[in-house]
Image 1 (cartoon, rainbow, N blue to C red):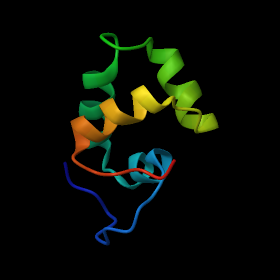
Image 2: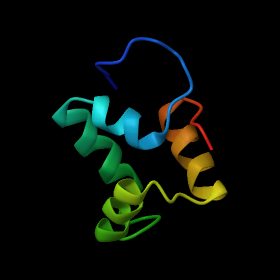
Image 3: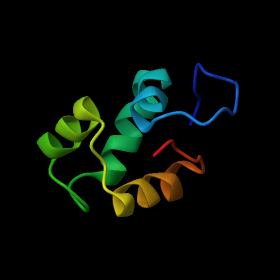
Length: 69
């Protein structure tokens, strides 16, 4: 997935997601929903940055990045 942010500093998933281009956002969102959570839940958690530890681990697995807790 191509991001607009090139540094590897630890960032929140929300910051990472916002740095993606539109196609990469759709691809990542579709890999998480509906298998792991509802579409609306994904955007709520994104807006509030309220991911559980298990959800963050899955997001890290999908993206290959480490996110700030």
